[in-house]
Amino acid sequence: MSESTAPSTRDAPLPAISMQALARGSGWRASEVVCRQGPQDRSFEERHGDVCIGLVLAGSFQYRGSQGSALLYPGALLLGNAGQCFECGHQHGTGDRCLALHFDAEYFAEITASAAGSSRTRLSTPMLPALRRLAAPLAQVQHHLHAGDAVAAETSAVHLAEVVVGVVSGRPASASTPSARDQQRISAVLRHIEEHAHDALDLDQLASLACMSKYHFLRTFQRTLGLTPHQMLIGLRLRRAAHALRQGRASVAQVALDAGFGDLSTFNAAFRATFGRTPGEFRRCG
Image (cartoon, rainbow, N blue to C red):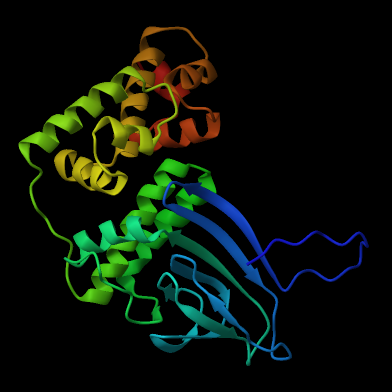
């Protein structure tokens, strides 16, 4: 979809399709797509530039591609393979809104190799219904994108892709044990996270330190430690903040900043969820 320049007239009609970038990183991106087409508009052929997993947030439309045709509705997932041509139509109503996740072919091949046992696995159906199994992973992606945390959003987007591939292929993800060499690499990353916990986390940098591809790093880290790099970092920051609250006199805002939290409301919410009290209550009850 191409970008267009906004008309100068205040009452000019809105574009039929608009996209808002939400997050992006090497090999993936997320955006919100709003379509205002209706029964009066003719459908036209488009092409998926990369692998697409799209959550329908509102509205309904007809989707047709090489895998078949489907009626998309809120909660359903649109599935598209890289290079695949498709058409969308709104024969029965006007407009829809979707959350679109895109993965480049190489990144998605790593995901399918783990989740389906083959890097050549393609999405063989045009849609997945609003399955209960997909509800929690979808909610996680939406939450992290809304919070503006690109690292957590990418981690949850990859997990959702694994679940989608597992559903489509009918095969659960591999549960192989990390090798001693991989555990050694993860240990080196752990030390780096400890030393730089107050800095912004960069998955590409951490994967490079581990001498792994980004997807292999995420998968190996979680299988080795039982939590994601983002969860590891947040837990470390919160424990350090709790210690600072008990031992020092710095303001809650300063404690949050020193621990690596750039947003006080995010810090307060995470602290309460972990310790069962607000930072101020935690300090007073010390």
